[in-house]
Length: 327
Ligand code: EPU
Image 1 (cartoon, protein in one colour):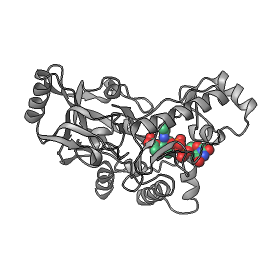
Image 2 (cartoon, rainbow, N blue to C red):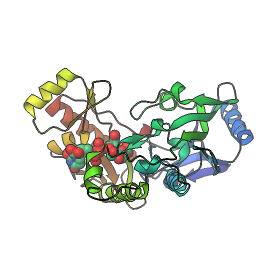
Image 3 (tube, protein in one colour):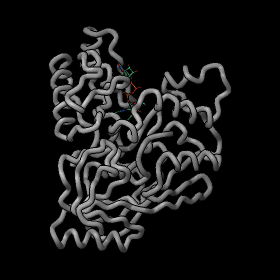
Image 4 (cartoon, rainbow, N blue to C red):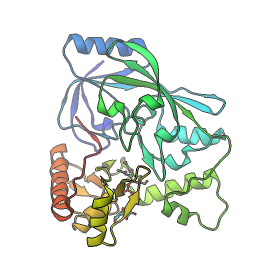
């Protein structure tokens, strides 16, 4: 274990914070040792992937653990990838092996081990659509077992892993993919982007990469953690009230008859697109993303988030929930 380590390379916001200990592990025995060491010494511990969905509000007084595991195996149409695999690499690997479905999830930053935690999703697809089961290390009883997808409480940017932090450490994920390619064009801008051409998985993959590169800041250049807020979900009654007042409001019907509102639009309507508080800012091209222009602290990002939440609440009566995990 390394001692007093900078976490700057381990959080995509690029906050200048440190961890008391940093451990790289490759097997369950090492993982068990860390959990035992932490419990014995009353230290907090946290397993992180690329740190693309966490906000460190200060130095971490315990053990940050990174899983350096990289194996991917294929069994028929099922692909199993270890937690340390880069998510985008897995998408590329699946396509190279003629297994389809993940193309809509190209270029999402982070690791495979982090993907179920917030049930990553984009452009009409989400992790849960493909998940068969997840191999976990249960820190409560120090056992390893498979959790079937229907036991993971997957929901919009949510799962049991997010609800019960540190109970389970994700070792690998098994995904059911398709041998036959079926285009998922449910996200309208993607459909428009690919109009009038024969659709292949590679075309979707390339289009997604292009759309993301145009809209979302590259965290290696401009610190960020993707969408900072969830898109709020409202009832049919609230939807009707909002539409009566704001006829341009982007609202999308969900399978359970609730309605999802584009938080980016709400923020933009409050005049906050590009708004800056020191080095913490609302991204110019996608106001749902908050960025660090260099020296912003987590507190400044959270102060900015608070301003946004207050303005959106005052104007629309809607609360915005923060999406990344605050540590
Ligand atoms: N919009 C504006 N102004 C803007 C940008 C967008 O008004 O400057 C409105 C438009 O009406 C647009 C709508 O917001 O149609 C939705 O925007 P977008 O398609 O960019 O997606 P999003 O709802 O803001 C979600 C995910 C993203 C994911 C995209 C694409 C959440 C919290 N975010 O963003 O995920 O990439 O859809 O599917 O659900 C992430 O979670 O970190 C993330 C980047």
